[in-house]
Amino acid sequence: MSSEVWARNEIESPCVKICVIHPSERLCTGCHRTIEEISAWSRLPQIERDKIINELPERASKLKKRRGGRAARIANLS
Image 1 (cartoon, helix red, strand yellow):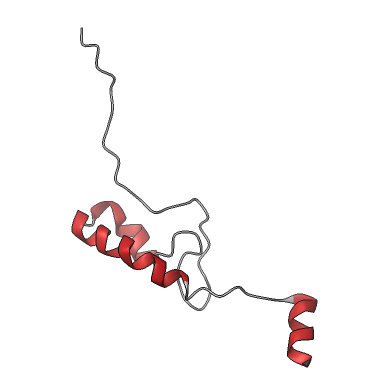
Image 2 (tube, rainbow, N blue to C red):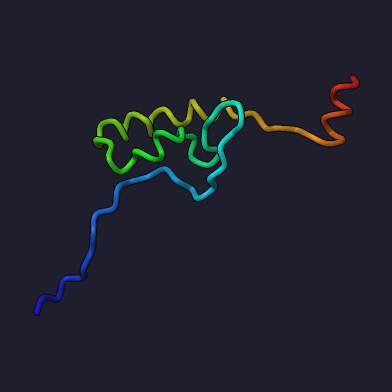
């Protein structure tokens, strides 16, 4: 009997379990990937996943905070 613990290799993912797609940028607000990237993630070659992961910080700047309600109305009046 082997004393090794059973383990499996998981594919590295930038997912942070905040899965909301930004309406205009079409990026996930949690991980900043596109829907297409998310759905194909496990089938992408490692080099392609690495490329996407390296692009994520730049994509984050595209997602501006949305302001609604009273704060937005006051800002639009000034």
